[in-house]
Length: 533
Image (cartoon, rainbow, N blue to C red):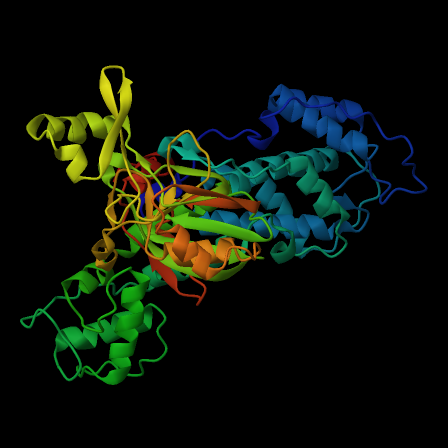
């Protein structure tokens, strides 16, 4: 195991979730009495203040601790007369699993672990809350707050990669209260993470197992350079073994013959890496299969961190773009109903990561050309050719700061195509059609100035306007051939999330990897993995 795994996530963490807002003091709930309390064990307020002072807790952390015990009139939460509560057992296992999965030494507490291991194994009864027992109780609560901040909030500031999607709202105290209120808690039901996070965490565990097994040797391309149905060779045998190790159960042998089952498996594997699904073993596929296990583990950890930032996905209609995947997905009540290829911004004109709501569709749009493009491309062309604007179906509408203001009129050669989809934002990013359809045949599609070009814009318009009967497919087609802009407001705005994930589990349960086209993974790696590679 590499060095960084021992000091992974050693960034300072002290109640991240608790420091974001001003803390409202909760008064002691004296309605809870020994007769109606869950346990007779209680923390003395003086013991708690001594603990706060000894542990040098921040003001916010101390207030959260006081609030939690005030709200339960100082009853113990983790310990009862019969030993550890079920909630304590669940939390301890969650903490252990997190440390094992993420190699996060910031959540290792040798003293606490020693006490908990003994209590987990032995039948114990407590008759009174002495100072050592009170210390353990308070220690568990403090550790829970740190655990929530680390495991569910995330450790990297999203601004490191200009991530402008508002982070999910999470309260450590509310989570603790919900855990305590649950009589039969399980980590599967209680953890405040989405299904995609859970699936990707399982893949992380699987890759650790692959790493421990070893035998991850480089597969040579061999003399043929490409292998297809009917070919034989050592490379074919090694690819079979690699796909079996990665979980493809359709391949039953490691013989050097390229058979029909291997072709099917290769096609599926190519899709997992965003490659053209040819069913042929070539250099691009072997490049992906030869990526070291450690590199893939780091990629999974980086994307799990991003998934901690994601807010709860809304019910109803929702559009999600994944930039490295070059895909747009439409969901309705959390089920995918439509997806299509997209073109995103090139490295010099990165598509911004943010969220908003799609409110308008504009058929036969003008393209109001940004000043940066006018300066760099349009103005020089105008100087070379006085008929340039007319030849490109453009017109000048004025001047601004010494630059001509130029727009392209509706038409077949309009750079926005025949329709655009607006979700107002300060980045001037939107979805649009394009006359350059050939680009969608490319595997890597980072060609735009930042906006997102759609492979099937008509399908998206049909779907979004399905609840407006007057907008029939025929009327939409006619509007897209107009010589004037036609604006349509959606009945209900649709949430849009422009995201950046280079690893995820798709709807068929397959782990996907993509290239880090903007270098965001690298920037996060510098924050997450403190030991230099």
